[in-house]
Length: 431
Figure 1 (cartoon, rainbow, N blue to C red):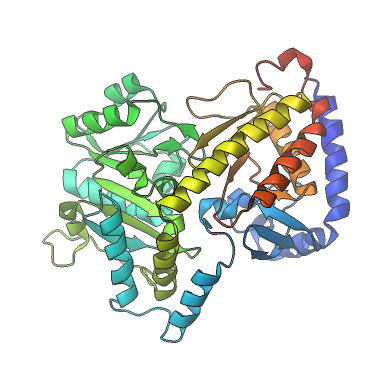
Figure 2: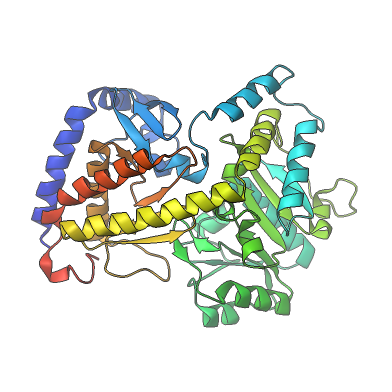
């Protein structure tokens, strides 16, 4: 591919985007004066600037310029029932009458904790946090205290929140290739406190675990006395009893978040009672673990309603619709002459501008990265709100009409990208 072809196509898209989002552009300048980069979450940044969203209902969001988008990002999987679901909103409004947070146990905490422990096989007890990042931090502290060991094994492309040790690296962190059993065997030794893994790589490209990989990882961790921590912050939505339940895994600890809070800030550590006991203030070696809004009334109330609505039937429909959408996007790409595959686990998908499905962390090269950015802008122009890296997911609020709009949006976006993808690499992708 010649970069000037890509540059020209991208410039055209950017020009269209600038004309369409004048109010967002002006607001971005104001945001940038008081917030670094004009935003407070790295992941929401994209060039030339993100649109400013002002509202959402069901599967649709609106920006300050009055444009409507079908939302297939859903705040990075947390809004499994879409925006402002009436049952969640009504429950939260009722709860607000009695207060939002208390420095004491509250009945809404009990209801959500009992629901989690009844639904997920690995959950003997639960400890609430305010985010998946906080849940990761707590789980690692528990693992090190329980084992007396320092080292943590994680995977290339895995994301477990904004945890310095995992995000920035450190002497006690070992990263290995996902789906590589031999690498796991070598990395897991007597100094390892825990191995932390997603049942599929989320930020790494929605890469499924190979058959037997997680089971081998679990067995190896048990053999060396390390804890097996399964990160289901995203994955929990894909099976009624969690992916650990559907796969018959037995993790020591499970990280949860996203859907558990019904659209509000949440995180949690589920797992064996003897391990969660380290957060019990009465334990002789208790960890100090506090958080002003841990288990707050708004989050726990919304979480109960969210999980109740996300029953087995709802999950089955989500996963089936996601499968159809993945096929439709691949077909749209083929008709446009754009090499693309869609990896999928449950109702979470990722579009790859490549000729084959990834088996480990899918790191887009500079050319593919530019092409993905161009597709993202094209989708916004077509009224589809997906992630800049190509990830998307579904909500229960989506109808067949909304899914049709998404497929049509991808078809038109790919059509605008014909000049980006050269024939010489059409079979193997654009990396």
